[in-house]
Length: 82
Length: 133
Image (cartoon, rainbow over all chains, first blue to last red; front, side, top):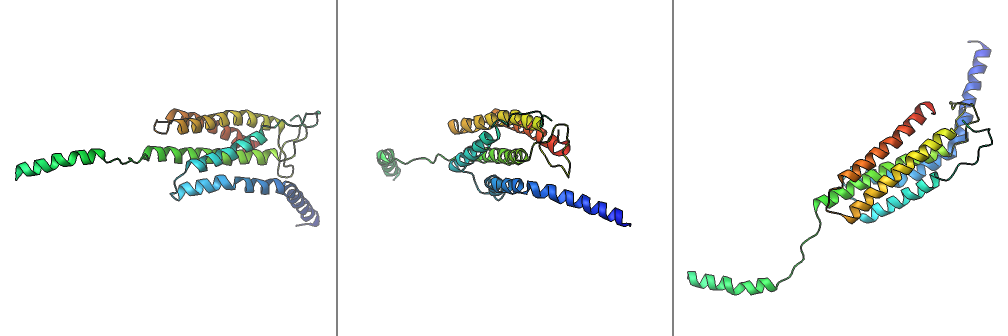
């Protein structure tokens, strides 16, 4: 393998790592936000019965997340119309 | 002897009648409905999470496709997800409201509507994950 090939591979790897590092906070936030839902699924799998209070709390969390997701996107100035 | 037994039985009837006790209201159907509805909300929550994570990405520049070195979210995909989420959220809330108001009535039609709406949402999410479109 010549030096140019190694340099190109290293550059590609760097670009990938940089792209992932840029979005790492979003991924981290996503993992934290999923916790109550994953915990509910785990409870059902392990045989714990759901209560009305748990359901109300879970639905409230889901509705808050949905409201957050439904916030309008920033207006498009033509640079992000894809 | 037979007369005496009958007399005892008759005599004890008013005592039984005066005794009040509350029948348990828990039914298996209620619990199954609660567990099912919790599963539906939890499934919806996990998808919501994927939606929010996608939305947190920077918007793709016009004409650029998402790739491993250009991790971005397409405005058009977010708009599709918002539309699908609106339908899913309404269906899940309708199912929960029905089960709460009618704990002993079969909620199949509401659960089925919620499942269909979640399947629609998942299709958009899967498409975004696979191709970015």
